[in-house]
Length: 359
Image (cartoon, rainbow, N blue to C red; front, side, top):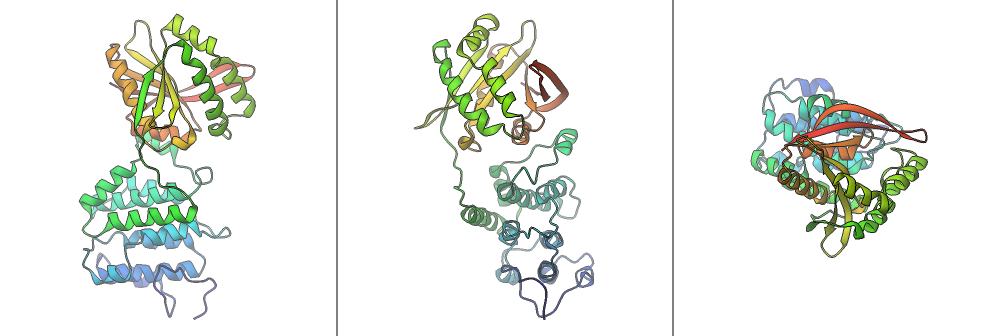
């Protein structure tokens, strides 16, 4: 047999091309033979230059509620690592679509049978795509997230769901695929960091300025222009300007500190006069500290302080193009309120979503 492309190393070797009719012939049967046939047809479409179809076939294999002792799972394990290999080795000249968005849609629109198991398998595949594929080229469907109020799950939540729902070895195979992908990409597996959030006085505001001067140029290119970054840093982050906010509006500033590393971020907020709203003006972390639970800890700390101040709502603004921050706020329980575009002078605007969380 002579197919145009080299075989996928984690799918079965085939001695002939498989066809869609061979998968469809199983009807509603989702047993071992269906599972293996999906893998063999997935190899066919991979070798003929259709990686997006290969993903769809492995999705169908993951619809099978097979038990861990099924012999076919010993030959062809649940295909998390096969999917990770495909994403890493995606051919530049072949259509792959947007796998991250594909699995987001699949997870949020799943139907029976075995809806819950299949939903969390889809989220597990989504997480692989999120970790492997560059977000700039493969963004989430922010429109769906906003309109349907979707909160992307954390790694810990996916782990828990796979552990409790799977009749097979999903959790082990998924974690194995994540570790393998991290090694292939030269990434270090992120571990949670011990955190302290500490309110500061005006004499420590230079540290906030110093952090901002590191964080903004690292995080905001591609979202706003370099000129706007420089402008916003100059008008909002001079220590005297922040001190005036403290004095005139009662703004709180706090440093986010990680164990053995000191200050790695900051948060500021204020209680609006004659209102039940606390508004978060700033919440930023050094990029190397993202994904370690510090942002979530800062939001929890701020919510606790807001309750102590008598507020019942927490609000913030986030740039419409800042997808990671938007998804983090959704996970923390914030909902979209409205679009807000503000002229901030010198020809610059802030084009944001206003978000809110009930306390």
